[in-house]
Image (spheres, rainbow, N blue to C red):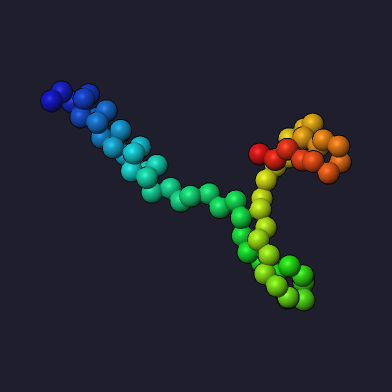
Length: 62
């Protein structure tokens, strides 16, 4: 096997292992609903793009 092919193969394996080891993104988390404790709520993170607000109670979130 030529040297350039081995380098390309090793690079492809390294990229695959790096992608496979990356943790999954967490879009939600649990925390108390109120500062003084109380029930636990699920919060979601997202970004509202420019123009993403519809009629005031509708949001487009990425």
